[in-house]
Each structure stands twice: as C-alpha cells, then as structure tokens.
Image (cartoon, rainbow, N blue to C red; front, side):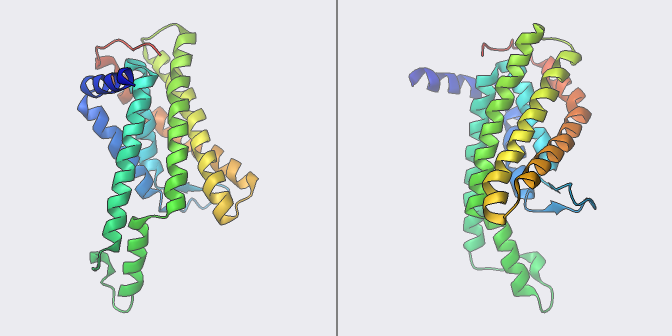
Length: 233
C-alpha cells in the first residue's frame, strides 16, 4: 500500500500539470456534453456531443502511457474519474439550490426550461454510474493495450509507432467504452436492443478514432518533447 501511495505521489509530481489538467477537463466535459445528442440525419448513427472531448481523453492517455507507462496513465484516469464525480456532486447540489437559470427567461416557459436545466446539470444516478464504470474499464484497456502493442513493435520512437499504438488502443477501448455504457444504461433503462448497442458502440468508436487520427500529430509532438523514458508496465 505504501509503495502504491509513493508511486501515486511520484506520478503527480512527474507528469506535467498541463497533461493532468487536460485529462481532468476532458473527462468532466465529456460527461457533461454527453447530455446532448447529435442529429446526424442517419438512423443507425447515434452520437452525442461528448465526442468533442472524448478524443482528448484518450489521446492524453496515449501520451501518458507512451512516456510514463500504463500504470501511471491508469492512476491519472482514476484521478480524473474522482474529479468528475466531485464535479457531478457540485452540479447536483447547484441543481437543488432554489433559483433561476439565465437561459430560462422565455415568456411562458420559464418553469419548464429551468427544471430541464436543473436536470441536465444535476445528472441521473444510473447515467453517472454507467459512464464511470465504462470510462475506467476502457481506460485500463486502452493504457495496457497501448503498452502491449509498444512491446510488440519493440520501438519507442517515430510517429508511425505512436500512431499504431494510439489508433489500435483507442478504437478498441472506445468501442468497449461505448458498448459497456450502452449495455448498462441504454439497454437496461431505455430498452435498446443488443444490435442497437453494438451499432452505437461501433459507429461511435469509428468517429472517435477519426478525431484521434486528426489530432495525433499534435499528441506525438507533445510526447516527443517529454524527456522521461517510459516506465515499466
């Protein structure tokens, strides 16, 4: 236990604060924006606005894994999850405070809009629980799969290596994230079929992988500037 605590403290002191901030910000933003669906115009393509942040979460984990090891990336994932739960609690308390949201001042609809905004920020317990389980499971999968692919490639430099590790681990982990959430929440509470869960997980993973491909050059440049050698898995 003491070794784990010492390793945790060392990780927080070693990882650049900007990466820690980006990780926490992306997880909080991802879960908040997941409340808004995206009208894609295609029946089988189900996406939400959380995708605007989810790519950053996984790209940050890829950078952390390739420079500090999967254990450090996973520990930081737990930190981000803890901060997200804290923010969810604060949002919930804010939704219970008597008052009026600025955007609710629409004549004749003030009460309806105010209640809707309270529910949006207050969250729903099963959605928060489902997203938390899905995130931490996919984070562990992403980090250790990324490290395993790195060992297979037997190289730790070059954009090609970074991309191969990031693309495969991101797609697999994002698929797992979407599927776990769909099975725990969408199927149990909204009556989705298994086919709908699988389709949503696959299409979402493809779109999130596209974001990863677009922004991976920036992630690689950040990774290359980090001078510390990757830690052992």
